[in-house]
Image (cartoon, rainbow, N blue to C red; front, side, top):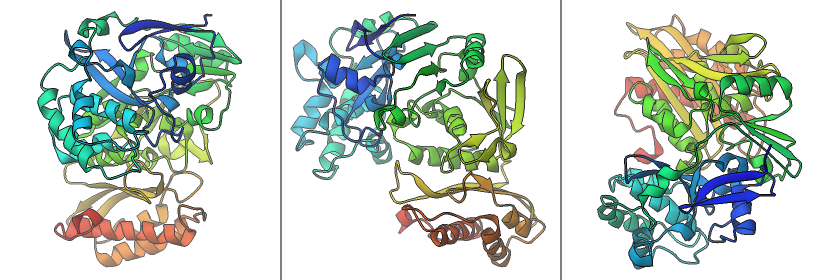
Amino acid sequence: MSDRIEFILNGRPVVAAGISPAMTLLDWLRAEARLTGTKEGCAEGDCGACTVVLEQAAAPGRITCAPANACLVMMGQVHGQAVRTVEGLRGPGGAPHPVQQVLSEGDGTQCGYCTPGIVMSLYAFATGGEPADPALMHDALAGNLCRCTGYRPIVEAMTAMTAVAQQPVVPDGGPAYAHAVLGTSQATFEGGATRFDAPASLDALLALRRDFPGAWLLAGGTDLGLRVSHDRDVPDHVVHVVHVPELQVVSLERGRLRVGAAVTYARLLQYLDPALAPVSAMIRRLGSRQIRALGTLGGNVGNASPIGDTLPVLLALDAVIHLRSAARGQRIVGVDDFFLGYRRTALASDEIIEAIDMKIPDAGDVFHVDKVSKRRDQDISAVLGAYWLRIENGTVRTARLAFGGMAATPARARGAEAALVGQRWTAASVERAATALAGDFQPLDDWRGSAAYRLCVAGNLLRRLHLRTTQPHAVIEVDQL
């Protein structure tokens, strides 16, 4: 065991020693490194004030940058990684970095509290060389909240960055530093009251899961990390799974998509279009780029939240969950049988989720995902619906309808499915299915919506699906008005 967490910070190797590996990167930056440009706003991964950038070597002289919320990252997670904060941005000769320059010249800051996080999001956007497309720019800024003013001058600064983005924007110190990042190998850290294991092989992970069934299994930490950042829980033991190669595999073959449990949403998006484009659109609303750089499909499944946005999608797509343990090897469980109750699953105490395997609808099938929330981007769903129907000659042959936010677990609407199968795909049959939802679900009342509201919304989503398929030019989205 060691208490030395080694990583690259702003282009230079650093060692964080004598700290808890469960300490957040945000707390370490501000309290230990005294890099106070990174701010704490919400401590929940919503506001973006604590945005830093995780850098990786790409082609020689180039790096890839992913924005991340420092409040959700534990120090054990950054071992062997490269982190850049706003203090690490420099232009030629120590001048402000081009990102900082365009934001300043364009009056893109007021009180300044949120500005360091916005600067880092712009830096990540610029290094990616993305065009000044309004949709892309708003997507890049969706994880950064500014309460002083609108985003017009900020977006204008991003537009000005397109010229800079075609040039190297690596800070002073040279791009070669990215190739000196410490290699990630199996490591164990202990500090304070926490032990932190980062296995680098499947066998090592399974042995840890067998020997320490009560340890937290941590992937990106965008859900579990809130227990540390917001609730200030101190875990006894954390097992970080992202360095296990088998959990990073993605394959697309024979009409199925298999996704390793530790594959991030950002990487998953590359495999979803065009066959699963509705899932792409949902994931872009599920979380900001900061969240997508860390969050994983396996984590969403393992945490089993009743409002986990990917879970109804997996139910609709007839997914299977690949589980593995040291004692029994691989076990495959259908997603219909995986969720047992509120945050309870079929995962045994010595098992890990290895992969999720889902079907891809045929080109002529009806497949769609709808998310209803108080705020369009980066918000918890009140209701999320996912639907896969096969309609032949106007008759519904198969139907899988799944909803989140309607029960203690994400669940299929089996009564509504039965009301559709074998029937003509008409407004009347859809109305019968919408009525059947009251027998499928007894939603709870909470601050996101009443039970009556949720049932009404779920029924309206089915009605909208019918309009979507039969009247393709109908205005059915608020942003189409």
